[in-house]
Image (cartoon, rainbow, N blue to C red; front, top):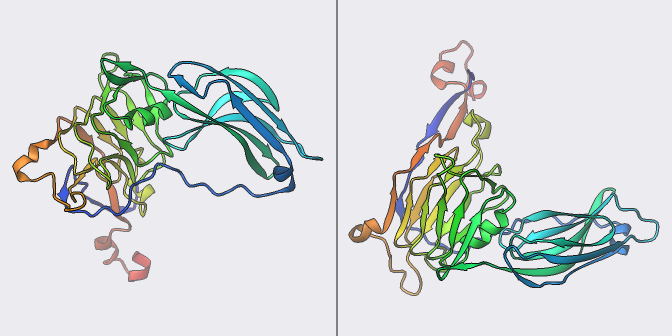
Amino acid sequence: MSSRWRRLGLVPVATVVALVVTATPSAAIPTDPPPSIPCTDTSTGQVSSTQSSLTLGQPTTVTWSFTPGSGCTAASVEVLFLDQTSQVAIVTGLTGASGTSSYTPQSTGALFVQAVFPGAFRNYGSAPVTVVLPVVNGKPTVGITRADQRGLFAQAIGTEDAVVWVGGLVDLDLSYMHDLRVAPGVQIMGDRSLNPRGPRLFTTTFPPRLFWIGTGDGPSDNVHISGLRFDGEEPDDPCDSAGSNDSTVFTVISSQHVEIDHNEFYGWRGSDVDIHDPGFAPDHTGRINRDNAGTMWVHDNFMHDNKHPTYCGPNPATCSSSPGWTARSCG
């Protein structure tokens, strides 16, 4: 048992408040530029793809080459794929200074060559690839069946009227992703036929917000999310993350006919579902009120072990009665 005393703030399940959104969230992950050394500047690399547009599941032939600068040696050279929606780089398995091989992109993005030098790395070339989602019964329809399809998941949920099925045994790592937009009409459904708890979507990077349903630019109406587990990876002792920012699963902005049901939320340091209704320009008229409160329906979810300490340290009541107590020593 930890000797630290903690006071936990209550985490709201859903709230409706006024909020003025001043900027559209971005899913890009900022990264510091790599250091510049002579070898990164004098080396060259290129990559190409025989298909610039293909249907999901269709392979393309990738050709790449890397030429080190004079006196330079790269520790490793590989082809990576940068997912367009999440801006997360994905390992392709294509390695070596040059080659030609088949690769099946799982989402829209771009191929590039990365060379790692002692103390630095550099990306070379770019081959954009557009992946077209299949259409079933008039709707873009995607099945997420593997852990390496997080880029496809991000693209699919951002596609209007898409149906996204997530396999019951899938553990989908969304670490380093944040502010993913759920487009109007999207359905995200977890399969529970093989796993009664449903598939698990998790993050280890504590994003301030994982999903937007609606943004400052407009609402996302007619969204349905069901049968999934959302794991925020809160440590067993919440004091281990004391002082960090809140981490929220869904932020809903002025969107109607949204249903979030039969999911499990746990390990989050903010809200599971956070609802705001600032309205939109030019008149900023609200779209959710007491007359249509049922337009946002959050029901039959299992929400547990969501906590964020407001203080971690010695128990003030005990500490203040201890001999030699001072405010400084008691924290």
